[in-house]
Length: 512
Image (cartoon, rainbow, N blue to C red; front, side, top):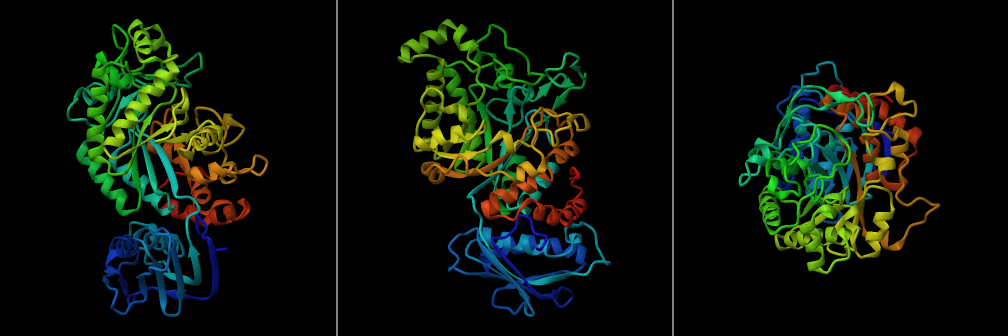
């Protein structure tokens, strides 16, 4: 098989190859110019050629052709023969993905950022018909626990796009840091984006200790707008996550009146589940709605994530004011209060043309309809959501958490939060395991899959890449190719040359 990841739905190699060189001419339908430009942009530097994209009416041997007969806007066909390369699609996303597949048919040097005079730019003759299995193919990055520079976020988006991932879920706030500029509440970044030090060693180890190094950083609104536009051209939507009612310690450290304690705790310097919650006073909802209004203005994606996970109810239980509020609302307990909280935020988002997304804990207390559930603990949350008529996304921690260890002998691995998701396990993921069957409602409600990169134990971008790749490559194949993908042995055969592509992009992956 050809070394393409994720593997196409149909691929047939033919005898012969087409060589690119000084005679290469490129044309594109006007609506496909961004996709063509991103493809050709990869060719110009390593090939040392000033390749120009001509209108579709001009003769060319690399052609991006609009074909209204291709139903799925993310689908494409790719044919390489004596006349050159022809990519056909109905949507710009399909044209972009066809271009990404074409690049993978070239030598890995095509991904280099320096001239490569030693490379032979030949593409094998091939016929490809391709389309995604899942609509939502997401990758979550936690920038709250450890901040990554904008240059790295661009690089991360680039590599996700090459793997046909189409949603970048950005975890921007948590107990350990607030990473998004909010103009109306400057203390969120002046106070909330900074912590005094960070835990060294595993959080449950008796000999853990502070490292004595302050950690800070946040993204300005201008930087975020640029990244949203950068991702959109690469057919990636950015899903922002603003956590509530839990994981709120950084926000409450900045604005203590939002919390439930006489004196707010500082921005957290350790990991694990915290007890800090937002209170349920009108001023707190005014704050949250103000924040979300600014977030909505930055991110055009029609979905917005509000977390909703790991909200330990101790502070609500201990608060006489909160208990009185529960009685006033006619609710049974704190779980129903969280449901009321989430419903209130869902109604606000709907009024702004957005759909609420939350982790599967948002189901606790009886939430139903109008929200999207990311089921992370197992399939149960997804099945429950589907039964209630809600859309859902599978983020199963047992297969799709890339902060877990990568082999059973964890003593030989870099420090991780726990768990075990080796490369083969990620590639084996089946959201509809034969032994459990395929609930009809789940099959209908399932938007897709998402891999998670939580960064408690990833203080550097090189450590992050080591944990993410090539497991993200395996996930991308599961999400794009579905159950009909080739087996793991075949994936490994294709991964070997694929790793050379990561090499030339300076991706510091873990060698399988």
